[in-house]
Length: 114
Image (tube, rainbow, N blue to C red; front, side):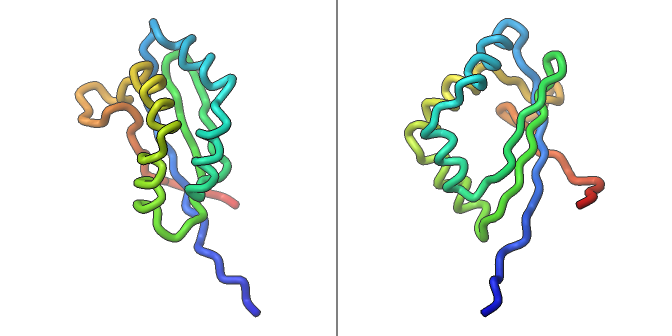
């Protein structure tokens, strides 16, 4: 029997932190709520990492599921995740001034090496 798995899709995203809320954002991420982590995993996201440089945050994750939009919708309906986003969202700004994004802006992949 052949194990057929969907290909891993990589995502990058960038945002900025509001300087006055930078420490609050970082403090929240030092102790991410277990239910939020469980929901991320249940929604087929792996290797989720957030990097910080000054007021810039860069996120990277791999998606291993078959229906990204459905998994994102499921995550958006999770009550703990909604509360988490209510805490973290106000700390963030879009990366690009004037962007219509509420916070994170998705990046296009330019190159990858396995």
